[in-house]
Image 1 (tube, rainbow, N blue to C red):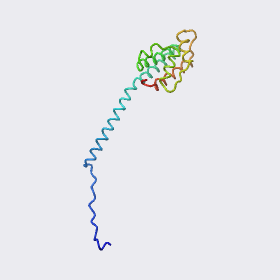
Image 2 (image 1 turned 180 degrees about the vertical axis):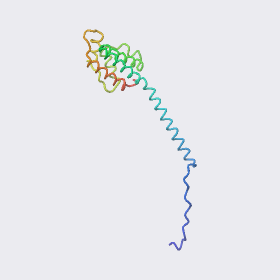
Image 3 (image 1 turned 180 degrees about the horizontal axis):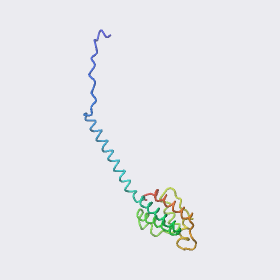
Image 4 (image 1 turned 90 degrees about the vertical axis):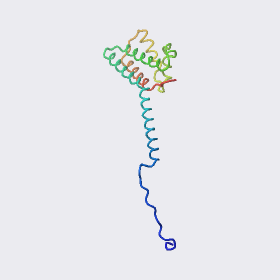
Length: 158
């Protein structure tokens, strides 16, 4: 069969260069994608910067009141920090009038873990505001740990 057709002529190999217009389009799309991802990361960082500051403030509060043995003030300041965050995120009209179990259920609705319970409500109502019983170090430590997790994991908006 080769005798009838003759010798096949192969074309020259196509050189690989980045000067083809498709590479410019692909490079532009990649640059825009990288820029978009960087902008999303900056936005995410800025939106969650308050969490970082709140956790830093909570650790300073915990250190100060733990060394003094003022566990009731530690729980009070941790609760106050949650309230300030909740007012900033969910609005003053939704947060300011809440006390006791209403407050506990409100903050539990704003995150998935829902680990604040009625004992925390009683801790806030009876031991802090009525000043009848002292707050133990274990109760304060548990409440601060729950507060840290709430600050890290609560929903930003409704």
